[in-house]
Image (cartoon, rainbow, N blue to C red; front, side):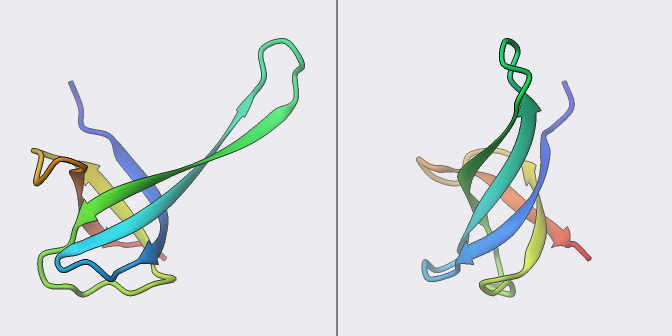
Length: 78
């Protein structure tokens, strides 16, 4: 099964080697046919503390680094 790749914006870089990324997705409601935006936060592993708040990044699913950290940063997106 392929690994999930998500794109989002860094909203926090305070913990050591960790960033918090907010990912927004849009989908059409099955009954109302209205486009709904949903935001979700993910903790991602940042080995060298290189990413700062406001950066647009891609994260990929990986082995668990801790209880809540199951993604790692792939690259900075343009």
